[in-house]
Image 1 (cartoon, rainbow, N blue to C red):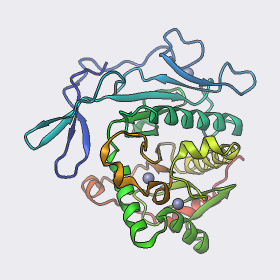
Image 2 (spheres, rainbow, N blue to C red):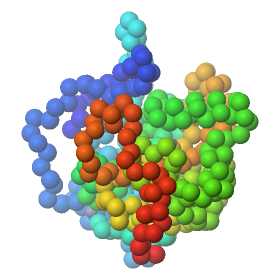
Image 3 (tube, protein in one colour):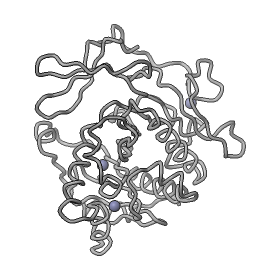
Length: 336
Ligand SMILES: [Zn+2]
Ligand SMILES: [Zn+2]
Ligand SMILES: [Zn+2]
C-alpha cells in the first residue's frame, strides 16, 4: 500500500512535477494466487464504470479503482510554497481500465468490437474526470512486459487524472502552440500530410487513422497512431463520431501485432488535450488549444540493447532509423 506521506514536488528548473516520499516496501510483494480483475474475483476492486457489448461476456471493459493508487480522489491539492519550491498533495484519480473480461484477450488478439468498447470506456472516463474542475489533465497509458514495469497479469491499461499537466504533454502543448502562432497550422496535421506525401515512414492507414514511425524516434520501432482529421481531444472525437473507434481499435490491434513480431514489451500512452474546464485563471494561454493540439497514441517498444543509459537519458539514442523500422513493421506477418 502506498503511504499517504507521498507528495508532489516541482523541479524549479524544469518545472516538472515528481511524486516523491519514502515508500520502500518492507517485504517484496508476492504474486497473488488469484486474479482480482477476472469477473469471478474474490477481491474485486471498487467498480467505477463498465461497458457491455460482447456476446457471452458479463461485461466488455470496465474501470476500477487502482488497488495501490498513486493519486487519491479525496480532498484538495493545497499547493504550498516552501521558499523557492512548490509542493502539493497527490490528489487525482488512478484507475485500472480492464480491457476485457477474459484473462487472455489482449489489445492485439481481441475482436474489433471488444477493442472499440474499451476505447469508448476510455473516452467516457476521460470526459467524466475532466468534469472535475480540480484536474488539469487526464490520460491513459499501458506498460506491457517485465521490462516495461507491467503491474497486473490481466489485460489492462491505467488512467490518471492529475492536478498538473505531465511534462511530456506540456512540452508538446507549448511546441504546438508556438508552431501554430507562427504558421497558423497544427503541427501534427502538417506531419501527417508530409508523411502521407513522402510515404517513407507510414506503417498503415485505416479509415480516418494513420500509423507511422516518427521522423526522430526515441527508441527503435517507436510508432504513433493519429486521427487524420484534426481534433485536440480524444474523448470528444471518440464519443462524437460513433464508429470511428472501430477503425482505431483495428489499427491499434494490427500495429501491436506488428510490434510484437519484434518485441513483446512496450509502453503505450494516449496524449490528449488538457482539461479546458479547469477553473484556473491562467488558461488564457491555452486559447488556441483546440486548433493547435492533436490527440495521438505513442507506442514505445522496449528492445534488449546495449546499455547506453547515460546517453539514453540525456539524448535519445535509437540505433535503427524510422525508414528501416517501418519496412520491417509493414512487412511483418500479422493475423488480420
Ligand atoms: Zn484475470
Ligand atoms: Zn491537427
Ligand atoms: Zn505525444
